[in-house]
Length: 539
Ligand code: TNX
Image 1 (cartoon, protein in one colour):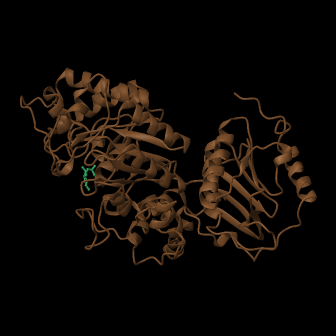
Image 2: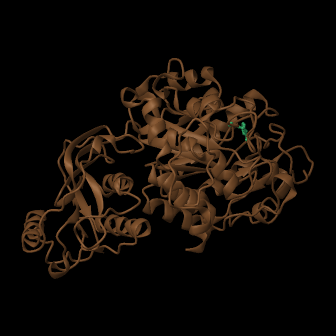
Image 3: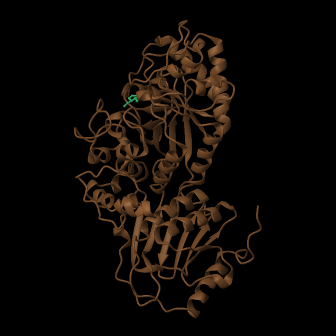
């Protein structure tokens, strides 16, 4: 670990004193128009917000100081500085020397107070002369800087000061999520999405404090992750996609790049290898896997439920062991998703036998197994997790086994469902899901008999049969995924559609600046922004 800079060593008190003394030598307080922190358009809505009027004026003289044992606090400060730069053009120094410190600074501090509720909790105190962000962990600090990013206005204001200033409403925010697992899934199997596309999605999700990206890496139409011991999976199985286009896959290096990119944003990647059904691409690569003696051809359509592994062959489990071992070796996160959905041509007993055996393999490699809700029909350990998408009966079975549940009900949380009959992309087998329907439901008591204590979180899956590029992905995911972030972070008594829709409309400048081709739902009064796709492209 690096030596802390001498300036920081005596701790935050000295740091603060310095900040205040700098202040006195330099400028008088700046007069801003009245502010109201509690009225800011934050998503997800924080647990507690109180306003104290006044404002902190961010300007070119501000700096960011981090204080904490873990060097990761400094990395959080650097991330914040970069993001402020992208938004305002300011180049804020991180932990500059005493001389370079300006008069109004941001402090990111480790606070080991044992009363913090969980590792993602943070507290933000904004006053005219400083911003103090404290958290017990760098992860909490990272969630807190997303709040800060959202509070910085898009445009600077004119004051008597010669330099542009970005006022941040003063007050106090105390925040923590209600669920530990707040996710989205991206299906890269039906259509492949590049590393760059996935990184953009990660960036957008992280801004709304989503902390899990589940990658659906394999399906009938494609196998998208290199497995060194079984190279044909990607050579053959990765070569096409829905519609007959050329497919693609992540090398293990690519996958590690994604994992690292996500973990710098305190986001876990959950890898999914869907089995024993949804396995046509695997069996087309290695025909022994399906056990019917035939070599399947590559599949470019969108039907489901026609393929299966041979569940009674030991070589199939040797194959699964290699796949789970290699992917788990690339995955620092605690989960491995085995799919398990829609195995319509696997006999029920064979299905249960398969899921039981694969659960043991997943546990052998130190991971918690997740499966679509059908897996709860097998005899599973309570450490495994069922992802509820369709069957309350299966969710119930999971609860009886003491398993936790992730809520992804297709009727409410499927990002691939069309908004309405005019939607350009998407399906509607479960429902049409306009932006209000996506937000107005209660994960806390959605599935009958699933108590809140057993809900691990909420995940919004984006299946990709009908989308093949990032713009189409964004059309289905945005703005709905922003609402799922709030459903999983903010408790029910703080959520309200009328209030949310105003805050959502104010996300337009951010989405425009990020060049997100969101669906401009007429239910929302979208704020006009100074950004357009054209100006962004010129930049
Ligand atoms: C059902 S949900 C599926 C997917 C499809 C999706 C399309 C689930 C576990 N399986 O295979 O892509 O519907 O909406």
